[in-house]
Amino acid sequence: MPIEVFMTLLLFATASFYALWRGGPPERLAAKIVIVWMLVDLSYHVLFGPSGFDKVDPAHIFIDGLELAALVYLALCANRVWPVWAAAAQLMTVSAHVVALIDEGGMRRAYWAMVQLPLYIQLFALFCGAAFHYRRVRRIGHYRSWRPA
Image 1 (cartoon, one colour):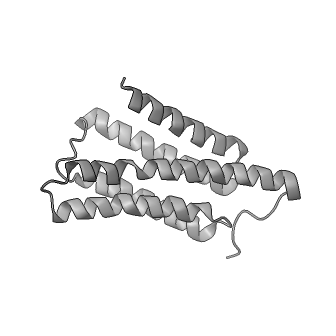
Image 2 (spheres, helix red, strand yellow):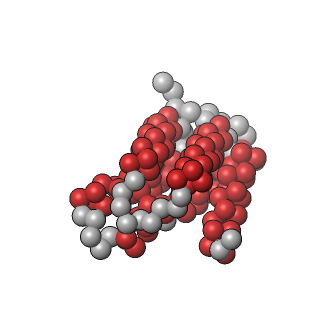
Image 3 (cartoon, rainbow, N blue to C red):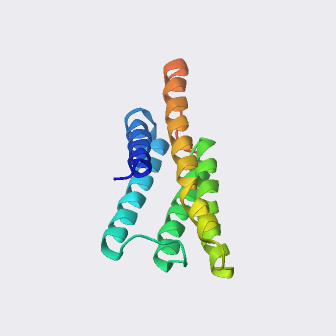
């Protein structure tokens, strides 16, 4: 296993499990969204092979679009700021698919970067959100996790 893959999986596991352990309901929901997305993505690649980033994969547009919808919903409902970061990062991923559809020539490295790197922004936002939530609960006690309907 390449070191980059190992480090990505380690970062993914650390951020997700920390959010499940210390986060409030929005952080736990976001961790579940990211875990489901990762499992679906890994299952897809086990079945259909790795992506060469030389053409747009309709399955990834669908998978990433569903994650974007879930994160936007979370950003609208949660009484937190960090989900906006995660949703914005996912919007970059979905936008990369659209850009690659428009111009496929010479886009391989840029397409890879636009699709893969926002995950790190999402994991950073999730980890920070869980840490800030835990600190806030210790300082002021429990507070409302969701915005009023």
